[in-house]
Image (cartoon, rainbow, N blue to C red; front, side, top):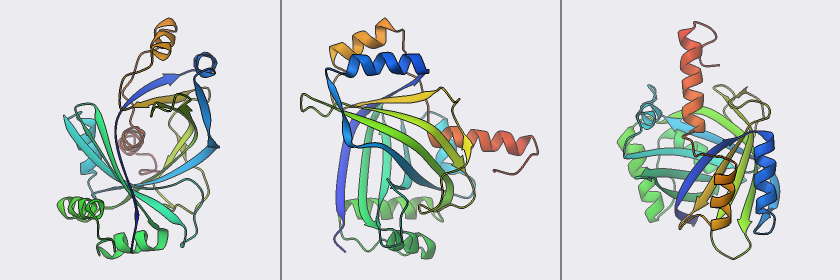
Length: 240
């Protein structure tokens, strides 16, 4: 199978905003950035991990190098629809993302049986090495959120995304399922991500400074895992 491949290398800076802060940022962005063609999309993710959550536990220790594997779609999928298989690595604050686009049925069958993805490519090889190294990876969390993505009008790769209604769950893990789960943010909160391979434009730096906005460390999957552990320790429902 010929699979569509993509590679990214960039910095990703995260900020937790309230409603007013988001409005201020959007106002500052207006002359410089444009909403992408998809508008507001719902992104669905399945994160894979070992039975004892080795990947996310390691990630939460804030090591110099960390990595994760997920399957992602930008709409509810049928089995023939294409989905992204992604490895996301972070080394010294730089994010490297490798992704393949393959039919959902092909991907899920591969993970169910343990057979390699039917792809002959460098990214395919990386994904296979990752799976062999961590062994017995399984779907661990379904995570969804609503995203608005903006790109720069100057043609650079500078992007800003706003994620809201971030939900997670441990059951019904399917990219074709309904959107529901446990929220990770408050109702008026937004997770903003600045994505760039270079520096932050001066106008954005000035806006962040003016409104006293400071970057934060926020992992969606990491936060979901921590909530799951808290629930388990309290003896409530196990992992939701």
